[in-house]
Length: 334
Length: 301
Image (cartoon, one colour):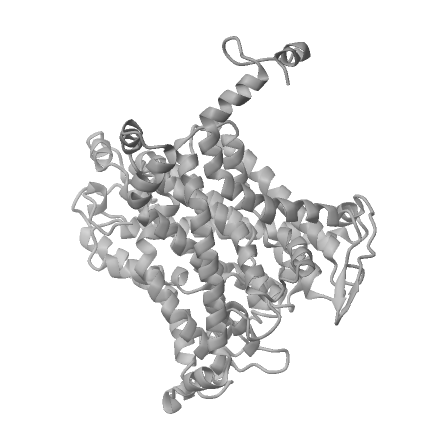
């Protein structure tokens, strides 16, 4: 590597001042930053081995017709080599516009988007409402706060079973509805009510996190701002609109993004609430799991392809979200 | 998250429905609004409490169909389910595997990511932005994206149905997660401390190890709690990668009470309660730090 090469390629050098040669720059950069690189090295190695390698391997699998019958496997002492073959982008084409693409992908896609939007909206509005209530001088608010975070404290896989007992036909919810002479839907069997129940359970699980985050945000808003607003004769609504909401901006943008990512990828609730009994209430994540691990033969290639599509959707969404935040001069708190 | 009272004039008045465009002057209606606030909070608390309380109640009924006629439980309340779960099921096997997997994940996650959190908090090196972007993107990985390749790779190296395999899988999410969390915490430690250390002749590693790390203990603890809870509650990988029922974690073991033909709901409820009580206690103990850790930058305002 010589100085001449750098000049000869005539690469645009957008940075300030005349630059030294490449090797010197590398050396300088090495001396200046080697400890930063040494410090991030463990994580880089872990990400490389445990994330990047499987990701690339998964990407390769999506271009094949791998399933549990033609993959490498060991039966007893016999090792059978993989026999799947490369089929290019057929999996993606099949998922997106194959024969029954609507039933397999698009219907789940629409439901997933609706599910995410509905859940995050409910999480945020209920969480904000409760945070505002808890941010008042109120007798016993520490106790309220402790009770209200209970759904977050109990592991999801435990509470979902509690909900299953309640939602079962003949369970407490339907018995209660019956005494009120209201219709008693089949929560765990009928598609519409399955979806309704899933959103309800997820809302119940997700509100405490929003509530606590927003409460933290509310408590960091300078109270003199409210005094000033009151001096200027701002109404309660105006104070909320022009002091509270802007004060919560960076917390809100962060928790909403996290909420969207978590809800979109929410596996445990739907998986544990319905098992295999609700093909139409599956969101894309649980559907991808079903394809890869819930049926025989296991369709590894399609499942991995769903995974890639999901990741792509989230990355595109997050990029736009961040750009939108930057344009509004908001920042992400993470 | 503190519980200290914030001197906030707006809150002394009606905050029950702050979104409503009502013109209420200070002091006016304060009694009625506090009643409304209490009313909403009590209803919300009941909704938060009920499913868990119901689970506890059902766990006391001896029969597996008691959940259908809960009124009968009052007459025959018993702790038999608990004795049975503790003595006759694989509860303690599950406890062991859950502990091995969660503690292993936590330890590796925190140890590996500590220096990285410090580096991205203090140093701006070429590739910094891309690296942060990678850390963020790994938070978005749906379960489905790594599951198939991980399954194939782990079965190649014979790590399916193996604690180490599951720990490695969990590390793929907790390591970047911990690095993010710790960056947030290190950001709150004044830079002057680093500068003082450097002036006194410490290397960046020395500054980190001798000055910053001892100050960052609460941050490390938050990262450890998060890894612990993440690994504890994970369902998908644990259900698929652990095959023998003595190696199940709680998240998988709990499902075994409900099979296609039979559901031992009473035992399941008792097991759920046994799992939930220590974890919830632990959670209450740490919860104040959890949200602060996650949104450290934002709540500073």
